[in-house]
Amino acid sequence: MKKIVLILTVVAALALVWYFWLKPQDYMVRAKLNSIPGTVNQTLKSWSNTLKEPNTMVQQGGLLHLSQRITFGDSIHEYDWHIAPVTDSTSRITVDIKDKEHSFMTRLKIPFMETNLEKRAKKTVMDFLTTLKEHEESIKITLMDQEELPPIPCACVNVKGPQSQKAKGMMENYTFLSDVLTKNNIALNGVPLIEVNQWDMENDQLDFNFCYPIVETGIAPNIKKVIFKTLEGTKGLKAIYNGNYITSDRAWYALLDHADREGIAVEKKPLEFFFNNPNMGGDALRWKTEVFMPIID
View 1 (tube, helix red, strand yellow):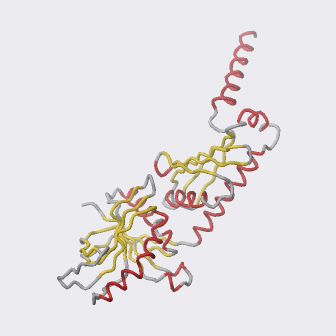
View 2 (cartoon, one colour):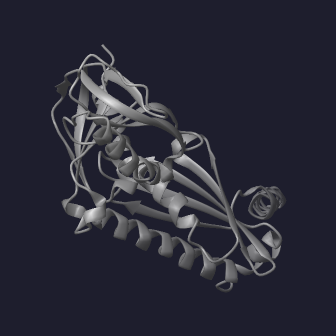
View 3 (cartoon, one colour):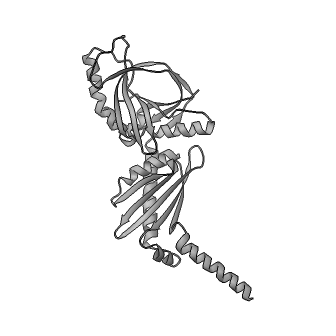
């Protein structure tokens, strides 16, 4: 009998040590999402920028793990967001939440009452899930067959900056590029496009060329800021993206997921062709972008 009591006492002591000092979170939230990991990742970062409470978002462990600190009054809550793919169109998130300054007291209260951390955690995660749902309803991604792209003579402007500012970089050069080509009697030959030179997924940074296809004349005039080049012909995975050009990179992640599932080697240098002028307004779901992810032979 004494042996049983001793064993139970040790087990209880170990459980208490784990619960109060070793357990990584004070509270956990789980949810299944109708989104792919890339969309969850990017929407989470955008949503973080809209919060009224001071917060920092740091990406760790690649696409699937992000850590965040949110300040509520005198409390700093740590959120560890873990994203896991489930199917080709769904994901699961697990959010580990900890009160950095009051963890012990929070854990002591949780079995007996709903703590402030729990209330805030439920509200915060629900706010994100609502934002994600609204975003998913504002875009559409359709995966297509592989397609061969021919060489394309272009006039381009190089742009570097945050991935979230891709559309801004395009719009800042949209009028400049079309006007300078018109003034130099260079005929356009297709819709504007971007060619990604480098995609730093870890830090959400891009180096890309914003281009207009042109009629090749064999003569490349010397125009400041403008690069004349011919995009090499390539075979690529294709998707149709409908929605605001600000978030057309959601199709990039969809193509990468598709390539991974099908065992297709691709180069993470997407091409996008834009068929609508955002300055004309209208329903963004009617805007069309053809997106290609080059296949590595």
